[in-house]
Image (cartoon, rainbow, N blue to C red; front, side, top):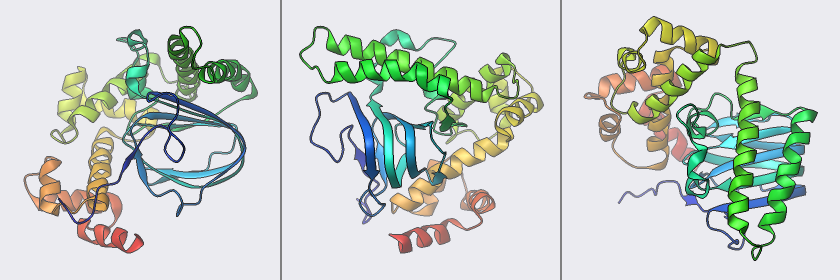
Amino acid sequence: MTSREPIDYVELAYGEARERSAAFYLRRMAGDTMPQPFDDPPHRHNFQELLIIESGSFRHTIDGQRFEQPPPAVFLIARGQVHVVEGGDDLTGWIVRFTDDFLPAGLISPSWNYHTTLFSQLGARQALALTPADLRELRPVLDLLEAEYAAPAALQRDSALRHLLSALIIRVERIHQRAMRADQHQQEEYRIYQEFMALLERSFASRHDVQHYAGALGIAPARLSRILGRIVGKSTKQLIDERIVLEARRYLQFTDLPIKEIAQALGYSDLFHFSKTFKRLTGTAPQAFREQQQKLT
């Protein structure tokens, strides 16, 4: 046991009385005010979350990245990410939270997996601007979800919720794909990007070499980097290193594990190369970063 506890996971209805379902939660915002940071400390979600903001101002960070996308917008927060609400005023819209096992098993297919698109740990688009047409499509589904959620005794209520939630996720994915293809990325390249992100999430702590990922995808390393550069503006090596450093920041900020052990957990046999990578991406050494974060808490 370390002297500093890791950041807490929160349940679906955190901050409120326990709700009707342990696997799905929905709340409409109508002129809401969000808590300030000192009222809502950093927390990890034990669920997936959609924040659909129609109007108002909302400020928050996801894994240290600040988002202030003007409304209307959808924010995507993946299970396990560190979330901090910095404030919000006059908010209208919806909060939708769910666990993965609440969704119908058939929602994920070989050609699409919402984990690696909408709810990736390194999501390229965690804030999606909405058009008036997007809102016209989303509102009826959200209204039906709200009505079902408010009627716990209704016939086949959970089944209806699951399928309406699936429809909502698919509609948000269409918006997401439109944003990702805004400058006419080819569909095949987007598929490769999705497969790379899924592979990276499984392997970042053990495989740091570009050749491994390119080989697993069956393409040349140079082509993989070109595809990623076009879609997210970063090379393969940049994305690998960023995922490693993201996890390192979590260890340093929220645990007291020795830095040597953190390096080993992230696939480094020596502390020098780990520290070099961390400093190159953050501008500070691991120990200095930890000390800076401790001063802030």
